[in-house]
Length: 562
Ligand SMILES: Cc1cc2nc3c(=O)[nH]c(=O)nc-3n(C[C@H](O)[C@H](O)[C@H](O)COP(=O)(O)OP(=O)(O)OC[C@H]3O[C@@H](n4cnc5c(N)ncnc54)[C@H](O)[C@@H]3O)c2cc1C
Image (cartoon, rainbow, N blue to C red; front, side):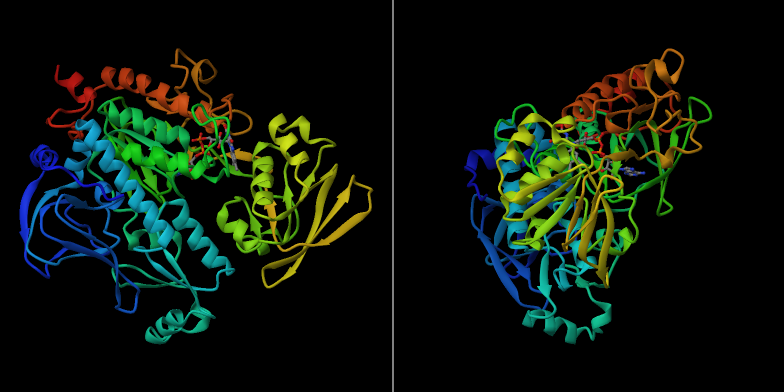
């Protein structure tokens, strides 16, 4: 986490940065504000601290000669999560975010050590809950769960102060004159106070997402930051295309919700979906792909003529212009057709099984509906955390829809009980909290009622293609995007009925709904993008993208020049 750099290594880094001197007491960066970048300290001492919201500073680490300051926020050019103050005169080498990304690519061995440290430091902050916003409220409150889930899925640290028990929470409530009905509140690192904010408001306040330059024309806009979209971003950006990735929720897509992915090549012991996707997200940013998360695309205006860029309208009124579009918007979980489901969504009905939910359900019995692999993984994960799981399955046998290894594993767990051939018939509860689940075996069977506070749903997914309405992109009968021959004409296998618009991953009609397949299509589509971009002309010039140690433009731009 805190490697020491040799003087000759710092010398090699000098061409990427500029020197600056700080006097004792000077701030090198401030929480909530975008800092200058990675700061190498050939000489001097710097203390990194976090604010507890009440003005008290707690030390995180003190850096000395040969060390460097920064974590992932510095690579992405996002606001700092901590404060850094010079303890003595500091001679520093400042490497701006774009030059840092160039260094990481150009200096393979040094780059690996720095990247590893940046990731480990973020993980340390996530574990400590240090450096991000402070949420004040009750842990089981639906809005607290929503905000925590959002920050966790975006790999952003935060701290929860229980409004009933934490003295610091009470002090903050008094200090800001907050009425209990206004909880939860969120105190952002920049000092702003939000009262039960939406995810978008919170994301903008903590600097997760910024305004998009409406005049810039990207080589490719990728809609969806699931495995398919992130793979496109990694390959497109590393091959010199300017790429913008938009996602309305968080990076990782459905895969980010997987408790353990065991069938992805190269991970024999399995890996949590969040860990796999966080690696891809950081890798894409290292190569210079831009992320706009959370930003929802509400409409795609297909270009009228080959020279105009495509225009994407965002939910917040912003616009994105791009010469090509990759639709990687995947699928969304299906909801159960049972009365009052929405009343319990948030606090008691869950579509993911992560450590957050497992903690919430510790030592309790939960109902879990579904018989696919995602249901199996969730059941195994929850059972492993000590949760008693009642699996409610429509079919007579799990083996019809679930991989053998998961069926066997479930068979060996004493705290998972499978109720086959049954369907949920009702939910009971009060004030948004679930108290009991009812189900029936067959249509005429007797109804069973079981006191249960948490219901998990893993009953499949529907394509996220509403936003394509009116774009002219052809869909199949179930709403998945048609590509290749099915889309008509002589299309590339991943190209839609509209030239220059491609579709990959779960959203594509006929695709294999697996992480590896989505990643493969994400890599494959980049070759098609190169051919398409090289064959088309463009009115607005694309900007130069980050290529280590050079001012090279993207291949597509080079193609135009030549
Ligand atoms: C719980 C669970 C466990 C799973 N486990 C496994 C496993 O172990 N192994 C395996 O191979 N597969 C697994 N899968 C399936 C696998 O996750 C999917 O096949 C894969 O994630 C598909 O990737 P994708 O990128 O095509 O789409 P998605 O992962 O669905 O990502 C699409 C992204 O697009 C975003 N989006 C949608 N509409 C818009 C819009 N209008 N604007 C902006 N963004 C938008 C969404 O927010 C989402 O992040 C699992 C799925 C689930 C749900």
